[in-house]
Length: 126
Image 1 (cartoon, rainbow, N blue to C red):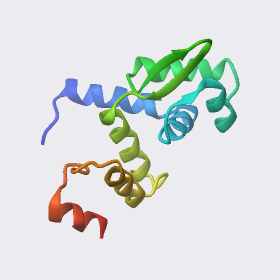
Image 2 (cartoon, one colour; image 1 turned 180 degrees about the vertical axis):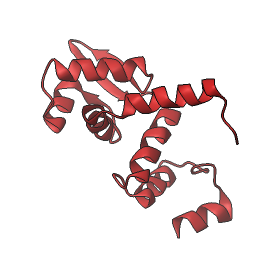
Image 3 (cartoon, one colour; image 1 turned 90 degrees about the horizontal axis):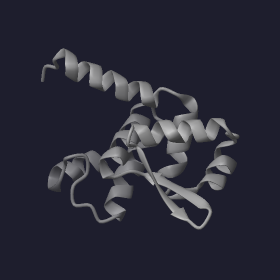
Image 4 (cartoon, rainbow, N blue to C red; image 1 turned 60 degrees about the vertical axis):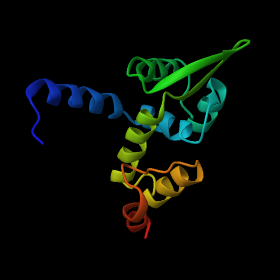
């Protein structure tokens, strides 16, 4: 596979979004499920206004989405594709064990893991 300049530029922009420690910390918390802003703040130790700024960047990058409940805003990973990108990045840098990632997907009932199924999935786990 060969990239053209526009594809390479788009990839670099996505990587820039992820290449920020506070954003990675936030995403790691959200991999465990939806969290209210206060829970994210407590789990990461990132105070206001930095937390708001980083959450806004993650929203702009379509990595997270929000849900309002009364006065609280809850954040979660935007979709399966965004979660897969984040988990893959963490696994590549050993921030999240790849086998845990595979087992998490199996536990959620996914029949395909990272494009693998059947014997290929078994080989990846084993």
